Image (cartoon, rainbow, N blue to C red; front, side, top):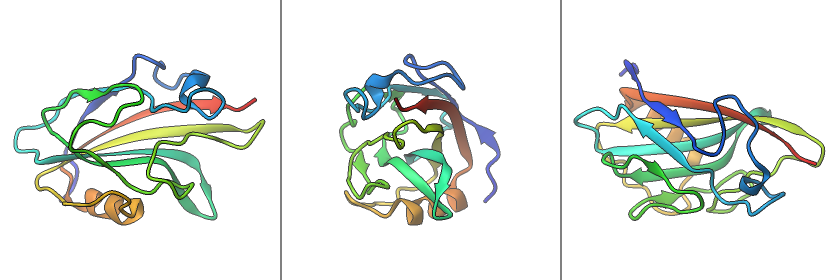
Length: 153
């Protein structure tokens, strides 16, 4: 099913296409960036969130954070907190947590993607984010994107 509508995503921590403060990276506290969203359609059963490094690693997407099981009634994520009922998949570092840490001296661009799904996927902690992303792309009718960058010192 093609995606037909857009979800609006914002963050009180970073302007759209702005530079992320270091506290949300491994140079700081490495806590998940706070996010807000609007435009979740009626009939949504689950939200899936990906935070991706835009520069691929070995021609693969690099997941900084993958979260499934977000309630459609939710309005966002508080800094550093996974909402009740949500589960984290394995990130590019092999952990089931948020982890934004480019190489020292490297600049990276990131995209936050939020998918609204018409049915629950029922994944468990440590899920494969690539497999889940493929399913989300196939089934989502709404999605939203938010871009920011960070240069590690």
